[in-house]
Amino acid sequence: MTALEFAPAPSHDPGETDPVHYGSLVPEGHTIHRLADDLADDLAGGAVVASSPQGRFTNGAARLDGQLLDRSEAWGKHLFLWWSSGELLHVHLGLIGKFRRVPAMESASDTVRLRLERDDVAWQLTGPQTCAVVTPPDRETVVAALGPDPLRRGARRREQFATSVRGSHRPLGAALLDQGIIAGIGNVYRSELLFLLGIHPERRASELSADDAGRLWDVTVDQLRRGKRWNRIVTVESADVGRRITRTLPREDAHYVYKRGGEPCRRCQEPIDHIEIAGRSMWFCPTCQPR
Ligand SMILES: [Zn+2]
Image 1 (cartoon, rainbow, N blue to C red):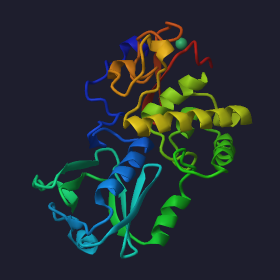
Image 2 (image 1 turned 180 degrees about the horizontal axis):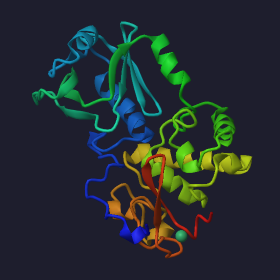
Image 3 (image 1 turned 30 degrees about the horizontal axis):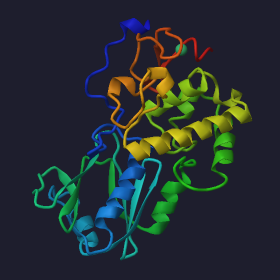
């Protein structure tokens, strides 16, 4: 199939995040880190009122109700909220989960699994893949299965990533989605990162040099930091789109290759192509990312 035969991108882009409705589209790690910060800003410092308007998390909500939020953290696509009781709330939004900030005066619909409220703000969780009250050892188990997260601190993460990615014999396009190799990358970033590195998505991860693996890590850290700061994925540089890059850049200008099948490459004008790897489409430039 050529790129031109590929169906046009739907207007509802499942790879990006909306600046207000966290996770209204499939979230990547930058969204969860941003969410962790924003939840802490809104909910820490006083007793939180927790409820489950949907009724499917009534017991869990009862355990959180009246607790103080000590801290929140993200690891890849996993969110952990630490409560004064010593327990944690573990959330993974999955494909359709959303965590929305609303005014506390707004009542919750019966699709809200968990509502956390303090003062005049409420956070409402709908459709999560995971929503559970867990213990610190439970968190350890989850985290132990995850690779390094580019948005967390730690001196050895770059080296850990280089070692684990180069130990994979799968195509890089698949290895980057493996949360055990690197935590937080999803479908948008995997396409964009490999374009930025000039690497074909089918290249074996094990063929990557140590230098290239390190470079891939560094670019990933830079990109996710920008994604977290702006709460959306914007990978382009101004020289390649002929305009200043800001967080309000229109979506059609924000990416190099993602969902740009058939459109000209921003660097070489060659039509962008796509390929299915790990069960999902990804996009690349045949010239800038030679096999
Ligand atoms: Zn190109």
